Amino acid sequence: QVQLVESGGGSVQAGGSLRLSCAFIGYTYSWSCMAWFRQAPGKEREGVAVMHPSGGNTYYADSVKGRFTISQDNAKNTLYLQMNSLKPEDTAVYYCAAKVCLQPPTTIQALDVNYYYWGQGTQVTVSS
Image 1: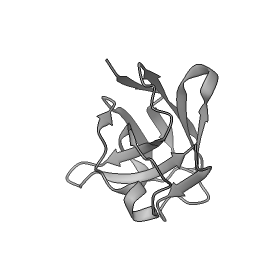
Image 2: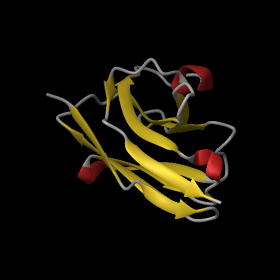
Image 3: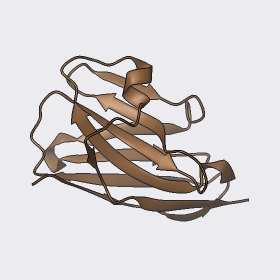
């Protein structure tokens, strides 16, 4: 049974940093897209950052480029999202997600919400 378990959310002032973690439990697919999404109140879920490790590719939403970095630790089966220079508009519930990607996706495909596995979400609140 596959489980994705996020941690690391919290409250921070604008300009601060947080690092989110997502533990992949029971997930064994080698060719995968591994992603972070977020959903703010009253808004649709949006893709934030994606990596396709087998292809060596990363993808970012324009709103977070240069501030957020996605990475993974294979030994720990964990995906990370380092968030720097946080802004109030980054406030949202953040979700990790995964799907099989047999080839590197386009940016649009990578950031689309059509993922099969999802975590439960972790709240990030940025105050001004």
